[in-house]
Image (cartoon, rainbow, N blue to C red; front, side):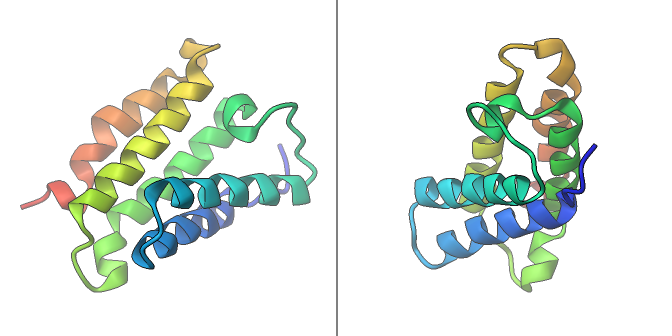
Length: 131
């Protein structure tokens, strides 16, 4: 496929998002940092898109990102050593759900498992939803 390390790219993009929010930047600014980091990493590996990665990435590209982000989100409280706010979880979750939706608009069948896993399965597995 490519030499892009999806776990590393997802981790780097997530770090940009998380740290921006932690420092008081808006969620919109954090989302732009996330999107930019993925775009820059993809470009460094020779991936080119006519419009943007979030509109043109392959199902495999998006699935590998989802796996990495799911792992990160599930362990976020433990990683940070405190309970991360439900607002953070909800906002990041919605942001990435919107990315999945945007990508799936032109080919819903190819991205059905992505949307189903992110929206129907993963949300219930996050620490914010555990008692």
